[in-house]
Length: 585
Image 1: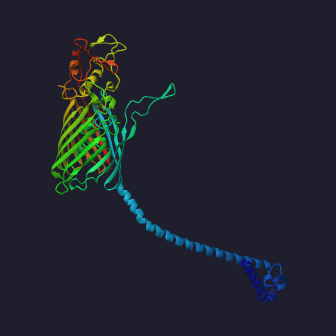
Image 2: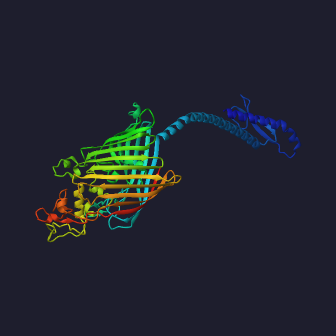
Image 3: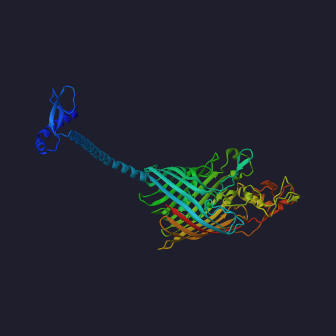
């Protein structure tokens, strides 16, 4: 209604202006048409309108009046006014928005310190690392025995000059430390998987071959929670940690860190089959005397499953391990100067209670085992040297001897041509009771090795040396390792006695990358010989028993058969060259 009144007032003003100010123009412009315009006046308000309506009376006006122009001017003024109002509303909205943005910016600015603090704290509490071992290896003389590096399985005897590129190990290390004294570590490991996997049956008459053999698999190597504030109130023991979960073995990783060439060779007990990761609980830490920073001793004691990180626990028993290191003159950093270390491990075979309770003359894999190591070591910034004496009982068995590669006879498949007629070395041979031949097979030899190693009464003795020397003012380091081991010194002349040695040189490319060129060798150093069945019988060899479904040489009931000699008992040597690479971040 207000807008309508404004329009009528505007029209009135326009009409008056036309009448009064346009008079001279009308008089002078003789060509203009004189027209009569009828307007309408409201009786009550005296307002003038262009159209008739209630309570309006007509009023005629003479003059050259263009009603279309008047209407156009009215519409333009209304449009101008409406547009201005819109502009005013928009300006007001923008002003309010600007005020809101300023307030929001003040709020965000107030929040920034909190977000920055959270991100900084999160970064300090969470850490990722990576460790990769890669290599190229060439076996000039391929033989059977433990692997030189974890999961580095080779084809074995008869495959000289075999070579391969390998991703030996890949670790991703994740550490989360919500408090300075509490750490969670999770380390998945990528590794090469081996093993014959049978086909999967599909339906009554179909099968699908497995694609698992040789795959790169993923497993958890370390996963533990560690608390370091347990003994902080006792000044000499400050820094002690209690750790629960899949964690480092008390000896193997300690010795690997001392040698500094884990990516090239395995430490002595690790090479013999002792895992570097166990599942259990440990107490470990330094001992600092006289209120100083020097370390005079460090320790690691624990209780673990009979299995390890990659084997399931079956036993109802557990194993204990402990390492204690003394630095007589104090150590300013780990391994600094002269050190004396003792290690002890005692446990039982990882077998189910039902199997372990069976009454047998020789327990074999079910028997107890122990491992002892006595070490003397010295370390400086440029070089180090370690000497070690090893003693064990039932700590090196047939599975450890062939964890790199071995004859098929050691894994359930007979080699050679079985004898199926006549008699052979005291036994009758037939298609239902085939006999193992002495030559062209590894069956009788494997049975002899099992007698030496798995009889439950084996005693191991070894001596080891390792160290390195960094050439000053270069990125080159010379390194080496020597291991002499007798798997069972109860055997007067054991064909499995061996020596292992590694020599090489490494180059430090940068703080993350190292490469090494080295030679690794396994020597069964006795001259080739054989042993009679009678001598093997003293251990765990049973004449006339079966291995892989075939009858072994010798028979107690047949005179003279126990004098049968099992030939060629000394395994072949292994020689290889490696180009190793380590990426550590």
